[in-house]
Image (cartoon, rainbow over all chains, first blue to last red; front, top):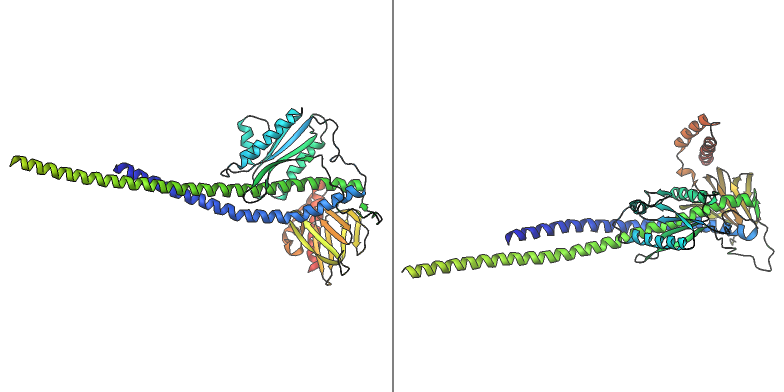
Length: 302
Length: 132
């Protein structure tokens, strides 16, 4: 029994060091979540002002733009999937990929061809492993996305949306994980393009004269510059939400890993103690047995 | 909208609010030329060029900021300036702007990008000079 006692002690030790690692990851994720939430908050004013400007154009002018017109007969769709760069975040990446698969299945069911865009190494690996084509992928920023990354993705998506013929897609969807709270993150799919602009949040009252909006140089030019920004800001929002969700999922996963390690250590300690006890008992009975045998032998010889 | 009859100005970049507060006047350069916005300005939506924005604050100060393109939107005495990239003078690295300026000068004529870089560097230096 002595050998297995040593084995158990070694197992306890390795579980303890694993626990230290998962505990550290949990704490790191927890502190980064706060930063991610702050980033999401500081991005809010831009999105708000942009939405205000867009709805002003939508309300006070009658300009149609390529990005807002519904194609009559959509045949091709693009799906952007926002996943994480690193694992150890529980079901985070797999649940967003599952949601994406559902969306892709649905689009295929509607008779549309689907081309896939991926952000995050996990998603990239998922499609590469299955040998499925990915139009393009972006990696390296999943836990702290920059606005630059969002504008790169936005530019690529807008390009493929505006492209004519075989290359062009008729609609663009985004699948990302929405951060509801520390405990709840839900994978969501939204349609990004063509844009649905919400009209006039602050429409003038009937009594007021409609304010004359001046557009410089022209409503078309302003819209031309505004809408891509709007798309970028929507993507940036998705990336920020995904980052916060990833960190929250990682914190949760690491917390349960730490708890499990604690349980394991407790279990192993009990077994090790039992083994130690059994070893001692055996030794005593061996000694007692030996003494008895010796005494019997001596009694027989006399 | 503000009670004391001042403009409410928001200068925002995608990742943060650069400056926000009450102001008497905003001067910005749109792609069609300079524009000054006072209280009661007609609703306006305009594209900005890479240049300096000057905000005369309500307490008689002046805030200078540099924007790399973007929008100016005015409605109901509320001015929002949105830019992909906006900086206040104390965030600008002047030496870097100067080397950038020299570099871009050498490239001008080669491509549009150089001209844009030149304009951005110039705007940065001007913003710093205006405050110092």
